[in-house]
Image (tube, rainbow, N blue to C red):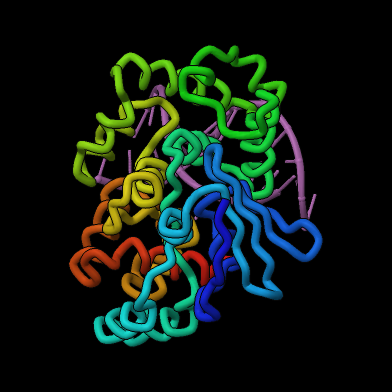
Length: 270
DNA sequence: TTGACACCTTGC
DNA sequence: CAAGGTGTCA
């Protein structure tokens, strides 16, 4: 049981509501969140964070870094327009959840879906096991697709169960995924039904720590067209254009590419 | 390589 | 009627 003070520069509510994780919610005056079996509570008034893990791990999870202004300045130097967003949003953290199972399940649920429903689906899955925490991949692999449909997963029920079963055939699937580099991880993940480029890149960025992964959703597509490729406005997001966007942002921002993606996404979000 | 379409639910 | 896409098929 750990309690610590969160620096004023870090914006926890902004960070945990930015679509990187889905099990945070406001309860009265405070915020409560969960990552796998780890629990969090935060009081915005006192800026105190309470957690069942240790402070180092909690800060890593939240994407807290010591030099957010340096990162913002670094980005501003590479592209002043994006840098202005970075300076304004320097309290936004790039999260690193420890539960890879939760990240995979969450983003499997994210396709063609609302954040509010993604949250409901993940919460219901956790509640279905009584513990209230994310079940193991083994437990998920043993679920029936009907059970998940009853929990509101819709057609993604098949994706989740099949993905779990496929991963489990790897034997030590988590260690296996973590040995890959960014591209290798994406290739491996995309072999699973229900995981395309976008979902694979989300898992690589948030779940596997590949900070140069660039998930491209419809919001980032619009923002990218606005800033970098006006001729693409109104066109469709093809696989080729998708990969060109990631390559370009990596050329421009290097290992900050994933964070730039988050900034742009968060900015466009209502 | 590109575009078109269906797909479970739910929130607006 | 669209939502942080993906699979499938011309």
